Length: 176
Image (tube, rainbow, N blue to C red):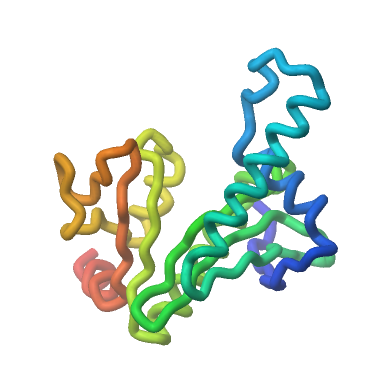
């Protein structure tokens, strides 16, 4: 495992090609199985990318960041930072940097930032994304009890709403 230290830099318009590459690698795996011509496939991915950006920009305090280490881009993340919560909208790591602790380091920074501000971190995760669920649980994320389709945190659409409360995580760590 490499050193997971990193910096976050706000993404800008000149980063669009890089952000599109990160998005395509992280969120469009398997699209080639649709059997589309290369130009149509590229258009579909661009359309999905722009739709996701428009959706995330609607969040109050929403901002996109590039994750850097040693002058190399590792991935990106979207955060929505409001007085009530710090919401993780997305963390995406380029394939060549996965399994090196990057997402863990970013999530650790986000949780530390929220703890310093005395507010929770919230996020939604696909219920079958076991790797992400293991990571979030290791940090002390729990199902959001106020969301209840069939079980705590179940949004009823295949996603779970999770919450990290700094004070609860401290109590949980002390109990171990």
